[in-house]
Image 1 (cartoon, protein in one colour):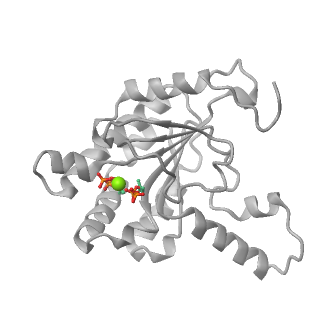
Image 2 (cartoon, rainbow, N blue to C red; image 1 turned 90 degrees about the vertical axis):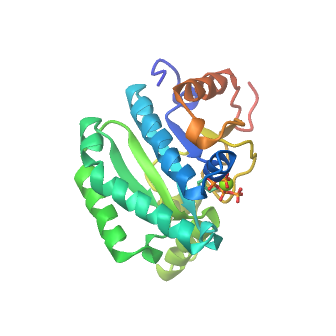
Length: 234
Ligand code: IPE
Ligand code: IPE
Ligand code: MG
């Protein structure tokens, strides 16, 4: 996107905290799961639109390390929804040249889901369009903890920022330029804590199932009006 610009002015990576599915359902007198089903439709619309617009990286917060606190019924509905989507939608990813990778501690997920994730990662690894990172059982603190543990295990005595970055789930992916959160909440909720150091933030009161291409465009337009200084002076 905006290839004529300098790398530090480009919008290559957008990360989204897809929030408000439960409230969307509640407003309609339905159970929360109904909101998740509708939220997935908004996610698919976004994938399509973002890849059409030529975005390089999109990270989506689908399930946090704290979301296990929810009722077992809601958690298993979400996990099944993700599982089914991965099983059914390979054609969609193939057609749009979308590469999928997963971030988060996947070891706590059902083995059959883990297997599906590995197979999707394998099958889409060569696609050079949009790269999508799906954050599942992801927490920024947990990601950092796991990275530090790996560094300790490697026996390193002195570590650089690059050493930490290389052990994060997002290794090799540039930091998000823009973080979008829906549903009026203005917090990070343990998302990409390390990577968001210099991200721009954009919030909307819209609930996730209502999020559309016009909102994406508005967020990107707002991003291009920002002045990113990275602590320097311009
Ligand atoms: C976001 O919607 C989706 C997930 C956390 C999986 P919520 O389920 O948090 O919806 P609200 O915030 O309760 O409305
Ligand atoms: C953040 O939303 C996590 C996801 C969107 C997956 P939450 O709804 O879990 O966040 P809080 O609890 O409002 O901070
Ligand atoms: Mg929420």
